[in-house]
Every structure is written in C-alpha cells, then in structure tokens.
Amino acid sequence: MPLILALETSSELASCALLHDGALLWRESSGVRTHSQAILPLVQELLAEAGVALADCDAIAFGAGPGSFTGVRTACGIAQGLAYGAGLPVLPLMTLDAMALACREQSGATDILAVLDARMGEVYWAQYQGERLVAGPALCAPADVAPVASTGPLTGCGNGFSAYPDAFAERAYGPGALTAIMPHARQIAQLAVAALAAGAAVTPAEAQPLYLRNKIAYTSAERQVINAAKAAA
Image (cartoon, rainbow, N blue to C red):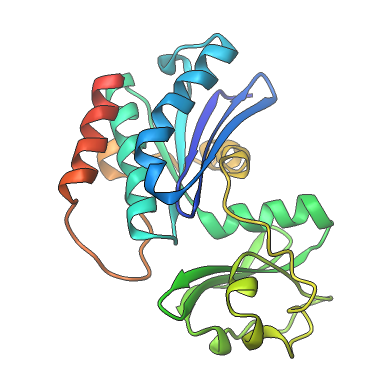
C-alpha cells in the first residue's frame, strides 16, 4: 500500500489525510479564511503521528476542483510546494469524485449525483454509476442540472441541495439528498491509490487546478502560501 498525503481545501472545510500502512489518518479545520494558515500545521501533525517524514511519501494528492477559486489554488499551491521540496509526484483529483466516494461509503448507493454549491447562483455537479463518471463535471444554474437516465434510484449528495432547496424540491433525488457530504481529504487519499497505480501522477510543475470558471494569476497571498510550503519542505 503506497504512502499518500492528501490535501483538500476546495470548500469551507479544509482537510488533510495520510494513508499509511493501510490506515487512514486525517485532520480537518472549518472556516474558509483560515485554510492557508491551517493546512501546513495539520500536515505536520499527521506526519508526526504516523512517525514518517514527508520524503517517505510516494505521492501528494490534492482536491483539484471544481470548488472555490482560492480553495483549489491553495491546495494546488501547497501540494506543489511540498512535492517540489521533497521530490515527490503529485496527483490532482476531482472533488466531485471524492464526494461520490463518500456517498457510496455512507449510503451504499451506486447511482449518485454530486452537487457542490458554486456560489453566484450556480452549482458544480457530476453524475456517477458505480465508480464511472457518466455526466459532468459541469457548472450551471441549479434548475439546469440535467442528469442522464440512471440504472436505479439516483442518490443526491452535497451542499448544492441545501443551498438551493427550491430548485431540487420536485426532483426525486432532491428531498433525501445527503447534504452534509463535502469534498474531504479522506476520500482524496483513497482515490489516489488507484490513480497512482494507473500512472496519473504528474510533476509539481504540471499539477493544475480544475477550473470550470476562469481566473488567472496567483494573488500575492496565494504566492506566500506556495513559498511557505516550499520552505516547510
């Protein structure tokens, strides 16, 4: 079993996880404004608890998006900085995939619609049959979410359902949606095992966020986060 460090900061919840000898350790911190300050100390706590060094890891995985601009850039920048300093490959993984995995773990569902609040009156969404992505990822108004025909009952998950309840109230998968499921480093770490085995790892320079909205250039605050991660490594 590979040793994987995972980072996830695409939403209001920041988390990191370490998959070590088949055991999954994790830390989390709420509050979107604190992600850049909180994540590195959490990583240090995890490594200390497991008794390993960053350089012992096989790869660093991160939630690449979709999600908040600052959030996905924070995770990407920190992953790049840590991986560059330790000479490790990077695994950019989709946040909606992590939500779907959490939904399967929690509910046993196979047909899943993951919907994440994108703010500005829109949502990010993707649909899954088992582990297979069958629609999305996409960005649209909540009323325009259009899943394809599913093989069984469709289970919804994510805070998009609670953010826009009226848009989903008349849909079969809306009222019972698991709204507490959000992107988390626990699932990112688990997904990273298969991604690493499949050869999906990239160099730190090649790692990029997944944007469904466009924005370019790091802010000065984001550059400080990247530089701090490199220095910590």
